Image (tube, rainbow, N blue to C red; front, side):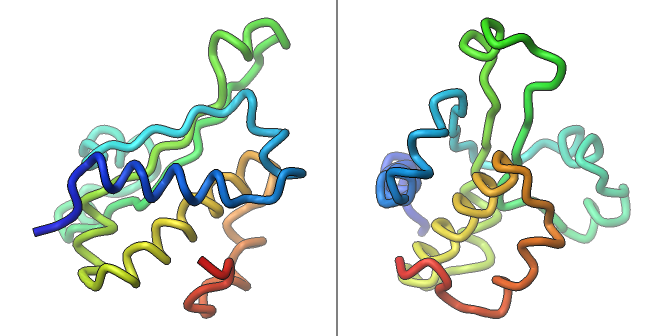
Length: 133
């Protein structure tokens, strides 16, 4: 049995709260949501093939930038980060590892908000806890 959604969301919230102030002050126009799973349609829109979806490939998190918005629109329609509970829990059944991976996922998606690409972030992939959770 995995974490309740409430506890999972609390881990996500702690990950955000533990970020340095110089990062947090730039997150006013970012909403971080927690959902159970991405839908198949969502995965397709994110670039997954039907074969990858059938094989069980999924996402831990996703950054959804608001494109082409004016400054006033950004307050009503902020950038959005979604953290997906079930794929993380499925791949990391150990509670300590799960908390580390939640934190890594949150930081990874926030890095996209700052313009970092997946390729930029690859250097952190082999470090089990690069953020000192």
